[in-house]
Length: 85
Image 1 (cartoon, rainbow, N blue to C red):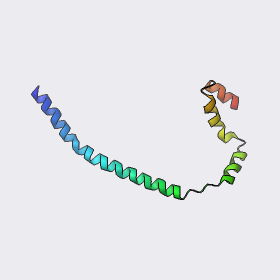
Image 2 (cartoon, helix red, strand yellow):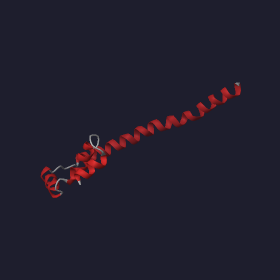
Image 3 (cartoon, rainbow, N blue to C red):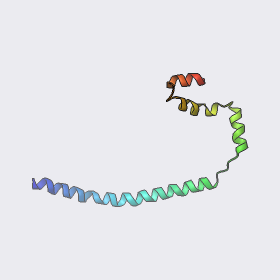
């Protein structure tokens, strides 16, 4: 029984270096992702008039899936789909 306890301690010691490497790397990756999001957001250009024109071109179908998902809990999913089709 003493050997099994010793194996467990050795296993825990052997994997500690993985955690020490993974945590800083995770922060580094998250930091890089935030830099990219900030860059994209800073270059984002919103044109409400163009957005409205696109909605009008689609005759409202661009929001049909959102309406269908909102109706799904009330009606059956297939019925909500059929009613909007």
